[in-house]
Image 1 (cartoon, rainbow, N blue to C red):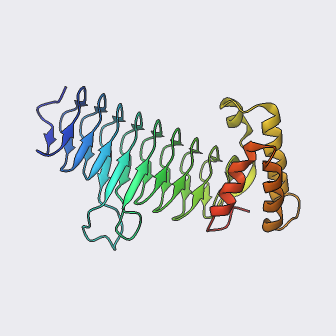
Image 2 (cartoon, helix red, strand yellow):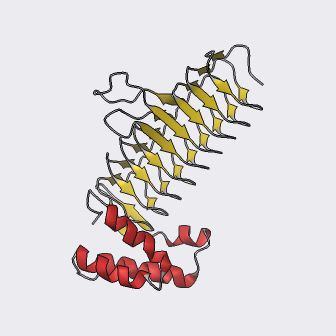
Image 3 (cartoon, one colour):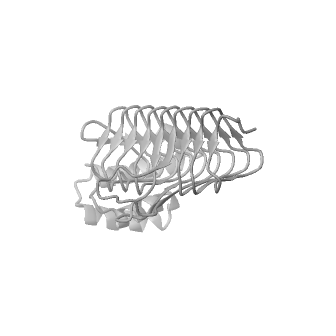
Amino acid sequence: MIDPRASIAPDAIISEGVAVGAYTIIGAGVRIGAGSWIGPHAVINGPTTLGCENKIFQFASIGDAPQDKKYNGEPTRLEVGDRNVFREFCSVNRGTAGGRGVTKIGDENLFMAYSHVAHDCIVGSNCVMSNCTALAGHVELGDWVILSGYAGIHQFCKVGSHSFLANNAAVTRDVPPYLLVAGTPAEPKGVNSEGLKRRGFGPQQITNIRNAYRLLYRSGLKLAAATEQLQALAADQPELLPFVQFLAVSERSIVR
């Protein structure tokens, strides 16, 4: 299962059933979970932990040093969950000492060719980063977020679960859950209703989310007043809780 032309550090831990292709480099401090497939010409440096059944295609760079001028070789790490796919020329960097010290990725994400996850990012599960998309340092993505081609997110921004970023979207502020955003800079264009349908949200739940969107963006209320009303509605409409919780932790203000 391991091509003899691969270069694997003596202390790397390769679990049972892992395939490693020709000319791939697996560095010191790397752990790879069972059932993973590593194609040819990939580079995985550590400290990096990969869960089970991940797929890493040719020329991907996983777990290398952060692209941060303040980084001075401190011990930082990358933690990746299960069943993620990293396509050609994808790059994922470790954390920094000045940040969290770790970059974290959940389960069942798809990172298409040339996508980039910078240092100290947190990526949830079931996300899709399309070709040539990029997360700057310290970005947080919730679950089920989709980035269309060439979309980019400014450092320290948060993007809520089930959001959809249109192609070439330039996100410079936080994106609440459920939103569809587009433009440079990115602006809210509505609710990602099609994505919600695909994930099992019922018609009434989607209607409630649309009404919450109108309250937040179309009512003319200031953010504090809109948030207060959303909190009251969430008591009977639990699908609005992610809105309320997100607004409570947003630090860069939200897209407007």
